[in-house]
Image (cartoon, rainbow, N blue to C red; front, top):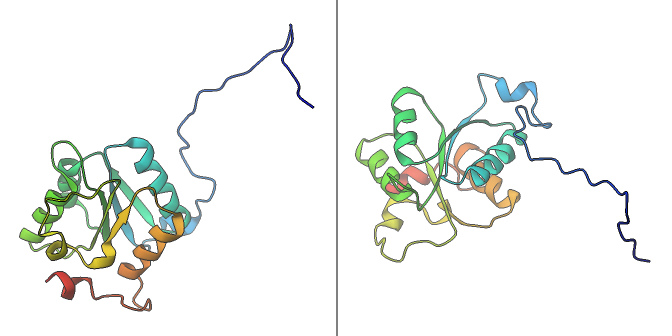
Length: 165
């Protein structure tokens, strides 16, 4: 049975709003021993969704809107992992990773992209094979890669530096 709106029906439309504290946030999110992850993406929606996925998994998250903003954050803060989009204005994700490696900063990185660049011959030299994630991706795929870099009990964990070193 189909119902149609008739005369006098009221439709309420609400504008989306930012959630200051995600419903899954816990005290563990603020624990000093929690791992810190820097999420870098020019698309605010993608950035916030990734941040929410990670916060719900118990990680502390900082966000940057492009590679230059991320580089500035790296100058003043310490992170355990960076997750960066590939194509961004001002400084791409690949160039951010190149800059991190050139500065000898020990920071694993996961590169996410809807379309990985064909003209990046040094991609395998910058990242281990399982550090690239194609958009769209599932929450479970993102968290599996994060654990690979941050959880020492995960099979293959800790090999990221040897693979790109």
